[in-house]
Image (cartoon, rainbow, N blue to C red; front, side, top):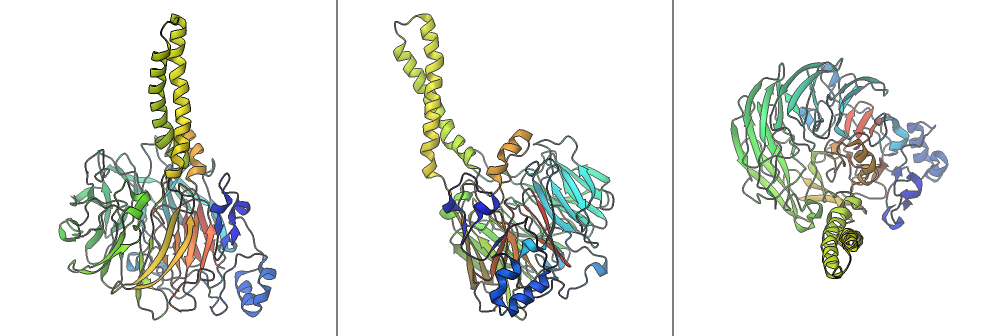
Length: 591
């Protein structure tokens, strides 16, 4: 195993027992290499004993019986048809969550393939990247962050920036964008939907989509057939302090932003990501795992399923559309308030037929909830279709916030009352000056002492370990195929949230990223699965030897990003893999 703390300095103040990896590799994003990737692969295959000498690192994972493939696998020529490589959430509608291109081969060393990265000019934690990389037909890259939209060329040069006017914690860009017909579409939390020129970043139009605003979590603006689709009105699942408030699905004309129709589902949506089966309809899931299919022309429902079961269940993950005519939804039995502690509620995965909404299979009783987006595809040439998902809860807020909310604040309130009682009992017969002094000091002293005691007392009851597994199922039947356990994340919040809290508090904007358990999963043409996890690592998983199981030592590898990932996952184009953590854009190139 490798101790990441000493290598990357990301674990200051945390016990060393909480920072070890027991498999594969974790790559240093700052490391450099002089030996070309293909040469390293060939040397590894010919002289395995020379791996450390050739690479100068233990970070390489390259099974001897696996090919060292180029990233330029045969694709469908998307750009040749004038289409974009990764135009919206989950990529291209012809193959959601998949790319017809592959990235890398069995030699997995992402740090050696890192071409460039970007962070906010004022420092790493000065914004949160909410919209993950989109890639156009020229391999230009677009991202959204709280403060605006940015476009980069393939070499990392900034081409333009569109900044949010009157940027505040209440007014920012919350969603993943979409690109279509030379325009980029996104929205603001204050309710505006807007379109920018992809060429110049110029604002083409802006309309008020909802006077109530748009939810501040990380959903997706999507676009197809001249229609822009998003959810508006901040949703609120039923909780102990409030009733349930559903949001609306609204369609707009992509040319001028005029509203076409709206639809209010019986159960609300969270991190809304509709999929388009290319038949004039859209399918999407609700926050409790139900499913809808709507007509895109007027928003009328065609069918709905699974809405009555566990209405209070909640996930910030979402669905996947398979090439087999099935629509897959995820769920957790836990409510939103209990989602960081989802061992109390199991998860499930269901498959519905797109044509008529019939439930084809339902996989329930998973050990934890699902808080991500699965992917459907073939994991090897000639293999049956699989649906792959992560299983495990999202992390909660930073430790210092938990200590204050759950320990110090209640302790201080109790202490203040104790201090007041103490002053009343001890002030009889004292001079007026002494009495006033006692009433001022004793409650404050008691409050301070009890706040400290409360913070210390609550620590043993806080959740500081988040296990996570990735599981594959037969896409047609739901039967399990394989699973692999990731290293348990041993901290109280997602990677980067604790470290960035002070900077974000000083800026007065969104305090924490609070990512889901993982980004959506992306599958490349050779069957390798990429995703970012709340532990701050970008993972790649592939059954290289085809034995139907994942060897954690040779078939799982990771890149240390240092921060969690929001809903948007890795994007792939020929020779390029781009992914954004909560604070950094990483672009990898050909091995």
